[in-house]
Image (cartoon, rainbow, N blue to C red; front, top):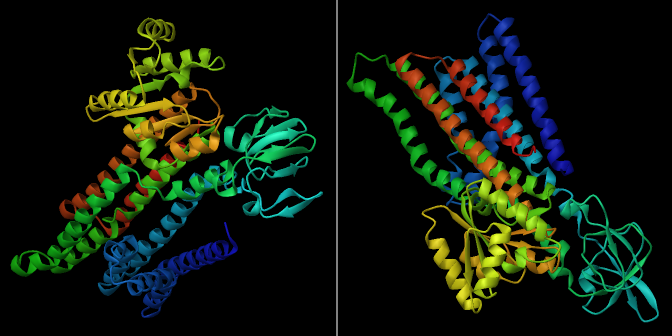
Length: 508
């Protein structure tokens, strides 16, 4: 968090604290007007000033702000102003007080959800010691070309991908693989940028430019994932474009109906309309959904799995069929691990399919050994792509995921989520696949599925809780005459519960 953000947050906390003191002072110790209203008004001004300035900036920035302007801040301001006008000053302060507190808590929740990416964001080095002539000089990694030799001393971070020419030791890759044991390296070993040399100095011949390096790909991923939009969030935003205006119109109608139905109490209807405005906005819920998928992606990184966008977490959660390419299952290192992956999917009710270039008898033998449900023998890449497309068409709305090698970009695009083994050709895997297992362990797919399923379940519960709370408040206002304080407390309480639920995604 930068200094400006810290200062702004500190100022916000001070404003909230002073407003709380003013609120209780007005409620408990001041009985005479206009001092009571003036004290409430001072608290309201402290809480509203930043929100109003932000709305004005949004309005003047572009005439095409549209729905950006119709948010919980605007609705809270309108509701608070209305409550103040009908002599409900304490309720007006309450609306803005809960709005500011919840916004602060939402920001903290978002930071916690993004925290797992902080280590990944620091993988790129700001310099490389490259051999130029008879000496090594320190230069920006961007200026180093493929084929040049760099030296990485003990404790330094590797700035560029390459092959070790001289030297041996251990590379700490924990930040992006979650491996507690450093990898042993020697001449001929591939070294990934972002690793930390924990042994003697090593000389590395560069194989990838800075822009195409592993560290740069991971850094880009960590910058983009918090802003990626899941299908659930997209649908929720689409729904809110109808829901918010409809709810606002319902609130406005409560101001018009009493004109025609004279038996209704006009001041009461105004009061209920303001309660509507105080609780109807789904903007905070949409942000919580975004934080939920970000938390799932952060949980992935703790297990050495990198994912490129929120929509693929959703796709993995809805998996009906997991298709394995031969390269994803058949190396000596992963053979026992592959059995764990396949049996794990079977235990979760997910169908497993093997696509292989082996002959039919060999493929059948492999499938029986691993416990694969279905096998397809293919002749070439085009046949493989067609086969995968045919399998996907049979999913009935659920997802088909493909697990293969780092260079199968065409196949990854065919399915709902393409997952690559990324221990070798890591940068290529990060560039082509939707998700990458940073260690070649197919069993980690089970973790990916379980994390995605948990996140999707919690997010769905959060959406249901949020709308149930809003409907309960609105129904209570209409049928039981509920006051503003219980309304705001109920809505805020559910919002805090939802934030806590979101943070559960980060836990094992």
